[in-house]
Image 1 (cartoon, one colour):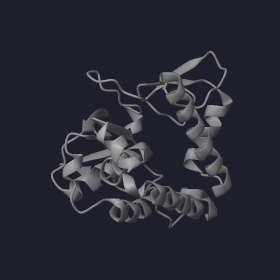
Image 2 (spheres, one colour):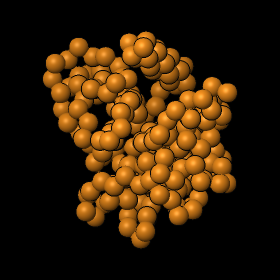
Image 3 (cartoon, one colour):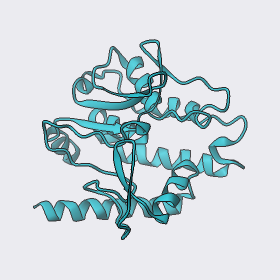
Length: 224
């Protein structure tokens, strides 16, 4: 009931990189959020167990994402049209595009894989990025990590200390712009970035989840 109520009050949901996966579940399968989180924990366990994380020879993170996306996306994706916005980067032109119309389920899956695709990390050194309409596309976070809609109020969420509405707090007064997002220039953020690529154990990830929950709760209380 709560998932349906929240979803009915949201006009649009946007995301880049792993955020695009969260956005897709929120829009298309909100009742599966808890199980999706558990599945991501399991994938992080797999990566953590590799000698060199996702960079381990013979381990391809993209293959795991294909299975996860296929598991959680419903067969019908009508609700995604115009509501789900996925940030991707056109590799050749190095420009951002926010995709919100999907030809079919396979097209949507390609968009999600592209938004999460990090060259040399997702499919190894010789890997080829996903194609969208015959054009290679990669991680949307490179060119627009925090999509904001100019015509409607947008609540922004980030796992990095930044100017997002919901995010960790670091006391640093210095900022750096990356992917159209202003980040705090701090050692904590650098450490968060490393752990995003080389995830820690499940216990620490759950601590991150709890911190994010508390940050969101604090934001909601302030806005009431």
